[in-house]
Amino acid sequence: MCGIAGSIHFHRAGINAQELEKASKVLQPRGPDDFGLVVDKKWAFAHTRLSIIDLTESGKQPMQLPHLGLTITYNGEIYNYQEIRKELEAAGYKFGSSSDTEVLASAYHFWGLDFVEQLHGMFAFCIYDHKKDEFVFARDRLGIKPLYYAKDANRLVFASNIKALLCFEGINTDINPVALHNYMSLHGIVLEPNTIFKGIHKIPAGHIAVLQANGDMGLRSYWQPTYGEDPDKKDWSEEDWLRATEEALKKAVERRLVADVPVGLFLSGGVDSSLIAALIHEKQPESLQSFSVGFQGAKGEEGNEFKYSDIVAKKYSTEHNKIEVSSKEILENLQDCIGAMNEPMVSYDNIGFYLLSKFSSKHVKVVQSGQGADEVFAGYHWYPKLVDSQRPAEDYCQLFFDRDHPTLSEELQDSWISDDYTRMQVREYFSEMESGLDPVGKALKIDTHRMLVEDPVKRVDSNTMRWGLEARVPFLDHELIELAAKTPSHLKLKGNESKYILKKIAAKYIPEEVLYRPKGYFPVPELKHIQGPFKDYVLNFVDSKRFRDRNIFQAKFIEKLLAQPDHYITNLQGNMLWQVASLEIWLQEMGL
Image 1 (cartoon, rainbow, N blue to C red):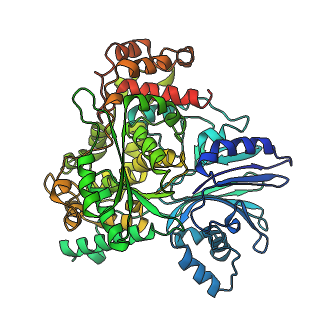
Image 2: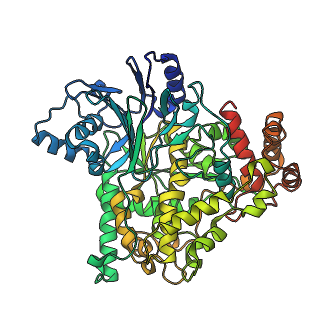
Image 3: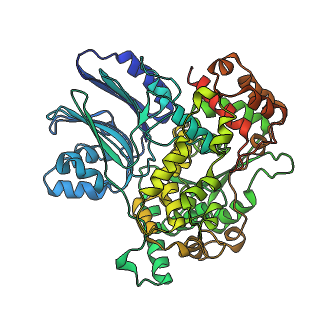
């Protein structure tokens, strides 16, 4: 796992290597093991390396392969690279390393642009094809690995996060009104390809782009799983679906054990991570290092879930590591956590993942994590409420949005408000879905391919890679998702029981007190109930000159939040003041 950056000029030679070196310093936490830079007349690639596969110098990047006419800078892991390598060797390819990077470039050389369909894994990369004089960008199917870019008439620059991209001069950092509308409506989510800045975009998940030497750029999707009934499986019984799902999940976990270093586990004590613990133990019964984090409670709200993770750790004999975080430690780390975010995010989980990653990185370089199961197998509270919906797009907005457009019009200054952008985007996405797809299936599709990409996945990448820790997410294995997309909704929701099919599988492995526990997250009560030093911290930003000069929010709205900071809570249980403050802190951390 790594950090990547690059600069590509269309019309004139002369690369500013200092910009790339500066960007690389920002990316250094993503790849603390090595640094590489390749500079040509009109383009340059940089790479910071976290060594997971092929720990030798042979795996160094950017990797130049003169015999293939290719140069690549790549962030990710290809779990089936050994199988692809064997196929390429049979076709006559020779390899000078044991890395997946060389396999990735060779696969492009052999199959062309369709090679991405061969890949199982998470990835973001740029390949320069010297013969064609063009650049190929791609991002994995679920956007697990980030890839941001800024493009104008003269050049394109790219990087693994926005903070690194801002090291390049001339980027338009004006706030994008559509993105701001998204952020305030969707619990901090900004829908791709937009970012909060007008001049910065992201390669969408599951897309490949080709940039010509003259600056022309073409973008296409290479993966769009079909949701709804599969005619080939119409006779499947519940047992058939259970068997197929369990086999797919076992394969997903097994794939993510491929590494030249030990693989640990984030063990929250929830069903998802507990099931992963069981399946890792089944495949590798030797000691597994697992990690949990807990926080100080506030206003009677418990701050840890150790009692559940302890049960699972004991059952599967993991080497369990727990960290309990004080209020003082949260405050000491909060600003760096926000500054490490790929984009501004509001979930309290961020500081949990940040501190858990900081702690875990002292023990391992790779962990598996349970993100994605709720979006793929219907684990959230809004899915049961959509079962009989006659207007799924409108009901989804009602259940998911933090606020509606009229409310937002009372919170933002008039200059930032025009159309109801976010509702329009959601309506459009629902209208494009397969005819006949039931309301729950529609909600699962938008959550998996839009919301998941822009929140849980991004949260995990930002906070783990801040500490040079690679997180692997088996519930986002694309073959498992393709199967889940075809799984009937009544096997995901049965009555009021969420994730029914997953829990049926988990019942074979997980004690009942864990399986039927109340649903939980990383609880961080003090960010929900902003009081004392946390209120002082927030006030330092929300009452700053820079905040006022941006003139984004109406003064009455801010006054209301500051008067009762723990009173105004969004639909998804987010503190409104924290939502406002998170954006401002992040903007200031970006140097703006």
